[in-house]
Image 1 (cartoon, rainbow, N blue to C red):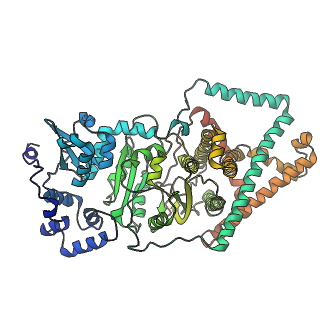
Image 2 (cartoon, rainbow, N blue to C red):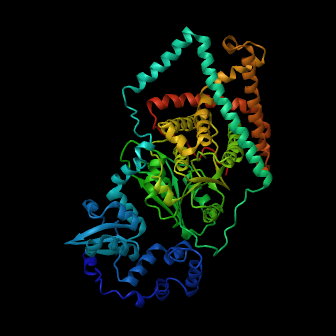
Image 3 (tube, rainbow, N blue to C red):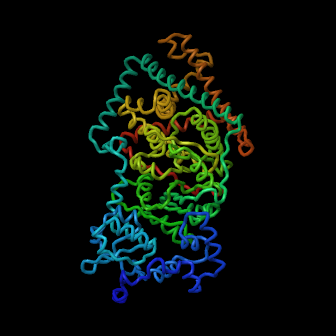
Length: 624
């Protein structure tokens, strides 16, 4: 370290910018790149908004270490290795974490009243210095690799940033105020259950009738929404408006895009994920893929350590500052380290279409400013694994190809999926990111976007995932989704009038249907199935209280709704890529009873562990 002290820069010694050689010329003079390499990189820079050094690295013409050394020579600033000489932890008080993240700097060493600050580029340091005013005059820069800056920001400020990630969303819009350890939760739940059992014993006919009426009302809500959405989507398909403009080189400056990929205990999927992401065609110098790991996740860390990561893929470890280990908390933490103006999310098992980023960038360029989020279509790459994966693929095709696009056509609130999401960063940060305690943070964020006046659009780009093809893991995954839907509904219905005012009546009812009715349909499913006995000629219990005509009418509506569901699913898989699944649509009535089990598991977890994230295991099937 003493050698570095002797080489500390004199701020007056560096050549003025007007006399400083450009970085490209410095590298050519040093023999690190050829004149042809420089011309190629400069030609790319005319079309994309990226520093020359990052373009050279992304194109494989230079490595990050060479770039850092040449910037050091260009600006007369020494290079430091924070792996060999890490910062003193006490230096976390020297600079606020927010400034370190914003300007990509980290305090490194204090000498007297001078603070040496690690930075990747002098421009970042100069902006930091200007921000601090008089105090900035006592700062001096040293050049440090970007990965080291990230790592040591986590070391110095990790606990603080992890706590902020867990509480980022305002309490009024979050479920974190719920206390899972409250001694009242279980007694209240047991009291409700006891009251229901008591009512069944004392007045069984009317108790069953009331429960069936609740189930029937939610069935009507769901069926009406599905028919309306299906009609809207079929009308759109007829008009053939599901297109998006192509990205034309030089049409506008391309933005930096950061995509977060949260991983947890992924021993099978990490290598394949990286292979899939290398197929992306967006300029790599403008693409930043961040693999987000939990600090205690040695399984995924060891898997990634055996993989050669390209320069545009990096790793961020989320400190285990508390017991909360959820995907939205990890996303919140990693968001602050990203540089893109567009923020995306993929899951561990995702295989996005190669031109997906181009479609996202083009649509954001053309879309109105209030379009905050673009949601891609999800599909499965292993539908032929077994019967369960086939039914899951049919369900996804129905939701993503028919119902959700129709919901968007109707102008209703879109509950986001957990992946293939892309946000305008400024709006995402304005809404404080994701609710770290909500196990369906995506659906919650979709509603919060709508409540704040923003729009979510679906775009015609597909990401392929792995269909859950084992029964119990499927139940666990679905129980997390249903639990999250129920929690999201409870959070936003804290103040029903405010929700009604924010959304308007039609969209308010859409939220009731998409969240509450969806959960209720699965929870009350056995009561609805009881209508089969009426259609078989037996008397239904409802006939004893409401009369035979009412019971028959409800039974026939239930039958019609089942036919409608099968018809919509048939239409959804009529496309060439899914046509082989049409015969399996008729088996869906045997598939959905598992969701009823998921609903009961979700109800139990809402009481005893509402924030528990029942993670889905990936890499079970190897079809790609």
